[in-house]
Amino acid sequence: MAEFSVQLPGGFLHKNRLFRQAVFCPICGEMELVFQEAGKKKDSRPRYVTGVLAAALDNIAGIQAEPSVVNRLCVADRQYLMLQLASMLEGDLFWMSSACSSCKSDFDICIRRSDLPVKEAGQGYPFATIKLDGAEITCRIPVGEDQEKIERLSDDDALHLLLEHCIEAVNDNAPEEGFVDSLTQADISRIEDVLEDISPSVATRLLTRCPECDAEQVIELDPYALPVTETDNFYQEIHTLAMAYHWSEQDILSLPRSRRRTYLDLIDRSRGMYG
Ligand SMILES: [Zn+2]
Picture 1 (cartoon, rainbow, N blue to C red):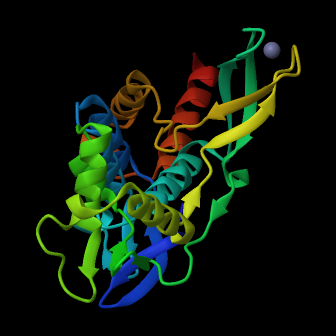
Picture 2: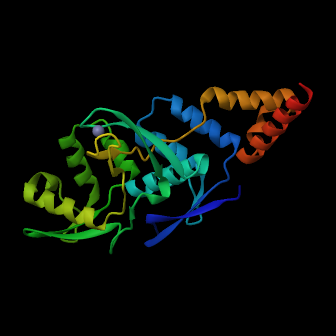
Picture 3: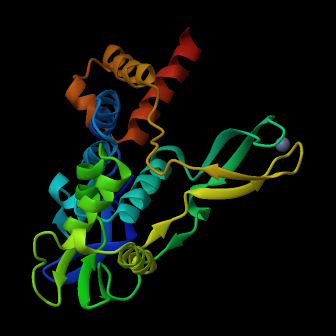
């Protein structure tokens, strides 16, 4: 598979210009090994996503996709990229199981990742100028790095820290210490509304109906879930190729996924022929 390029719903700000192109590397065994290992670590979700995307992406706007770069992508861009990566690994279609909130029966739903509504960033992204009572502030959209910092905080503390990080100017000056504490509830609601307006987003809640009782159901989707092959399968595939061809682990891991599967098919077929 060749490199695969996508258009970010938000974009990456570099030297005051917004770039929206992200390019994935072709999927190879080395990359899948990173996904496997990252899944086993007990990292926080944002850190896991950063590690996976930094391994999977070649560049963003021509800039090498180091963790520090991936960390500066907004939340929706990171969700969008994880969904694209899942499609590259598994295809566009996937099945989810759910239980009806009304009649409690289990049902399956088939979802196309490409059908999930994506809202692109609004004017001025990633910054918003917001008029509050007595002050005009400049606020930026939260990014992966912010998510990492608030991961283990209570909702109130997380909001406080986000505001401290994201409010970049008050009446064109750097915010004074304690400015966030001076905000009223109305100010905070106003900031949240404006940021939501210009933020890109990926729909992660879907409406459907229970096939048994027809009650409306809301399905919550995990945009970060990655359909990595079963760990055992992955290592089994490496083992099978090593046994058949006597290639080194490194050689096998460097094969693009599609080529690895072709060789595995060939091994299967020759076993069928001679076995
Ligand atoms: Zn039902």
